[in-house]
Length: 479
Image 1: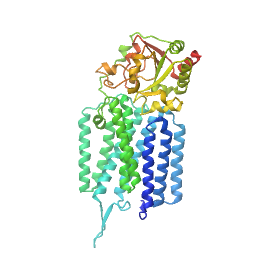
Image 2 (image 1 turned 180 degrees about the vertical axis):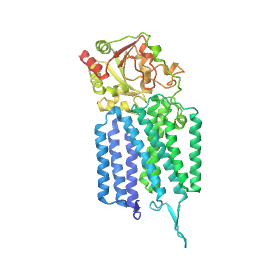
Image 3 (image 1 turned 180 degrees about the horizontal axis):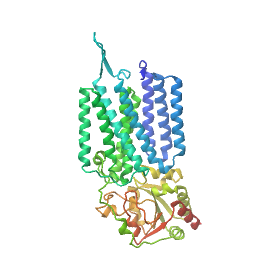
């Protein structure tokens, strides 16, 4: 394992510069307008930290290091080039799982060979073998690191399976899940305390196994509507896991980076919980995705009357409007309709129509999903508004154009106490004079698994088609 060279003040300075770059990167990522600069600063900071670590630690031969960097870089480059924006939430969850697994492996290696990590006290008796004792503070770091890493790994795997469609989006509610989770958490904490006193292998491995189990149990009960919060929460966990690895490896840059990611992820989770009227404590406890019997019935909705429109109808209504508010959702991402949508907005503005975009904090399946897609299509930043900034304008808006945003526009969140999304702030699109709603068919429901009563309102016109195809037809009709 890495053997550090004598402490050099330039090393501390390099890590400090890297830490400042990470902080400025987070600042830049807070807005789409500065996100590219934020990404560049993050890359610069990480480059400084990696190069400094490689120079100051005797880790491996240059050939081995070059091979590892080349393989990892190639995998990352190819993945980034091939991954679609619709699969970005799955990719993020997969990356979180790798961070968690890395924390588990580092902790396990440190436990099996503490001398190599410089975290052990070796007693050499006159007779008999050497006695290796892990330092008490290192036992705390190691046990917490393996616990957080294991929770992050198994939780991220479940999140990936849910986001990727390998598991259903509905909550899987186990009997007595809260009691089980609390009991497991108490057992893990108790074993951590015991491990500080006694470094027996069975304690360490039991902590590891129980942590894998609780990570699974925390995410399984969470429904699809709350998955964006889960992604940000796991992002926080991965940061704390990285910080724990930093303590074990005696690397201050890793500690700083992990703490920044962990704290920023926790703050983001809190903000999103507030936006969804969820309890932050219930997120940490797990299983906040709704009750098994909640939600609207799809069978009851089939017989309700609804109005169907065409691209020509939508083009006429919007071209005659004074203001149109566009509400993008995951359906837009699936159809990759953001470029056609921007073209539609440009055509409407050429007709003297005010065009704005309304973004719900949890639209899509990860934080900022819609903002990234609109930025990719070069939608002006000053036309994009968050829920709290634009919700009051729907009542004075001629047309609300909803493209694939189901749960975040469902009025049931304000009226139906049996709905799993009840209490979640939603966009008040139903208050617009006319609501145009693009949807593939009337048979499907949102990711939360509930029907949207907005479809059956008198002022709603359903545009049933592929989102990209429908928007392109509307553009032609406007012309």
